[in-house]
Image: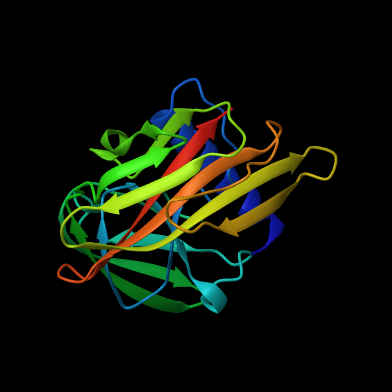
Length: 219
């Protein structure tokens, strides 16, 4: 991804994150839910703002226009960047036009439902934080919490990851750290000068949908 594109996406991510978590200043580089381009996609409104990775179809320097067949379901956040707002359940076809070519992506948007029965961090039970959104935050000052996740019926736990991001103002770059965490085990967190996240990936075979829960640890 070109630097100017990354900078714009980071700015958008910051705005949307602050809307979800007032008073918190996380700087996670990919806080917008990112999805790969595909001719069709089933997705929930767990995180209503998504970034579509167009891969080699768009290099970031070419003009990009984004149009939706149904703005009441999927609304582009303007031309220039493939950022979409999932407004409500339904279907819509989004057309990305760049370099004289058009690429269509059909979305089936589902209502969000909490996929976890239990989610605890260092003994703090927080499953309820994901009742209406796949993004939440937790005030946590410990250094090595045990992570426990129990999916709701119909869901299967795919992975738990600890992600941390550190911003270098001098170079305007982010350092990213990722560690896979086994369920019901502990993970050592980076220092408070890093932005820390617990990212849980689940899959529902009946709905054929993947849900990703992102917990920002406010330290």
